[in-house]
Amino acid sequence: MKILLNNPDPITINSVCALGNFDGVHIAHQEIIKRVKDLAGDSRKTGIITFHPPPVSILHKDAIFFLTTKKEKERILRKTGIDFIYYFKFDEEFSKKSPEEFIELIRKFINPSTIIIGENFHFGKERMGTAKSFKELARGKFTVEILPKIKDAEGPISSTRIRELLILGNIPKANTLLGRNYSIIGKVVRGKGKGRTIGFPTINLKVDKEKLLPLDGVYEVNLDIERDTYKGAMFLSHNNIEVHILNFSDDLYGRNVEIRLIRRIREIKKFVDDESLRKAIAEDIKRINQET
Image 1 (cartoon, one colour):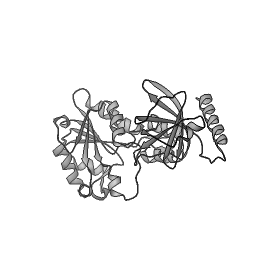
Image 2 (cartoon, helix red, strand yellow; image 1 turned 90 degrees about the vertical axis):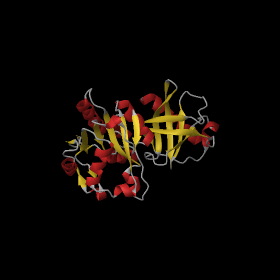
Image 3 (cartoon, rainbow, N blue to C red; image 1 turned 180 degrees about the horizontal axis):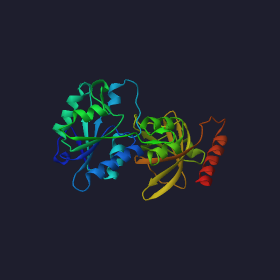
Image 4 (cartoon, rainbow, N blue to C red; image 1 turned 45 degrees about the vertical axis):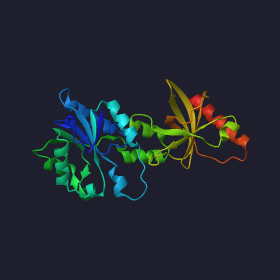
């Protein structure tokens, strides 16, 4: 899979592409990608047209948190078999481009045969462009297919909805909408060593500052280390992440690990002494072993 940033490449010519932010690459995004691949068949290349950094991080001054970092998104998209990702560099100047100018940039630098968008797609200065106007403006340059919103019994499936579920600690439902377990990737760094003193050593993770973390609490998680999968208990409090890995004792300092969330077990509590904390962690581990 090729990664392109404002850089024309022959691979994009006459391709079939999906256009959007694709944060999370959830099951609705996956349906769009499936349509891209079906349309392309064996004769045309497939791509994702998106933006870096994501527009919301430029247009809003408040802190923004994402389901997937750039690297995570690229790793997931690579597994789908997409041939390339084309990033438009998004800055304040780019945000002021009219819908007509944006369409012309796509024609000039990518020159696809077909672009697929969702019906709620907006683009151009102040998001004045709609899916309908995108299709009209593209006439004669490339064809456009507009897909309806993909829904379940509770409404449209979206990145915003998944973020809300994670913030509420509803991991199973978020995982269902993602089509996989929500994961947190971080580098193992040295902590205070408190867990080891009470018999439950933990790894401490440093993660991307823009990565969305779920509601504080204790979580059942899975980790892949080498070729084996281990169960773990993740303790998340005010962006501090510690994980006790069951039946594992090797040194992971300095390594990047992926934590896959299964469910939230309980809220974070304060304990009067180390023995109370030790008993609580032992109970957490008992629940993980019994209910998985």
